[in-house]
Image (cartoon, rainbow, N blue to C red):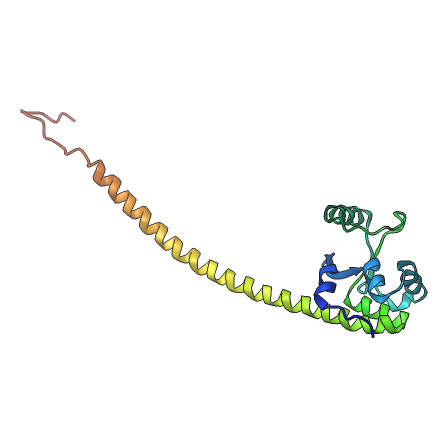
Length: 179
């Protein structure tokens, strides 16, 4: 019996690129127990099963940025720099398990699905938290606006008390208004 993999381990390998949550080909190949080359060969042979929302090639810019971040963490994959990695969405990762059809790929596809579901649940709970935080922030902004107005009125009154207006005095003696 094979060692089970916790969805949290797979979740750490999931990246967000172009608005999709994806697993890179090298990570997916390692999970499915095949080489990256073998995985990519099978994807090319079954290209009709992988529409653009299932799989895409990383651009040079994305690859460079990804390599920089992986070098910073000390976790870089050794791959031919001439070939940009594939990024598999959740559906692409499951389709890859179907085309590989090895017992390891089928077994690991369950863990991959669980990891994507767990990530989706975490993001949903974060969205709810963000929505509540925004509501609280809006209520506080309204209250602060009212309080700011009241504080400004108090400060204005204090300034007026600090500098009372000079009382008008009538001049002494007789004055003629010659206008």
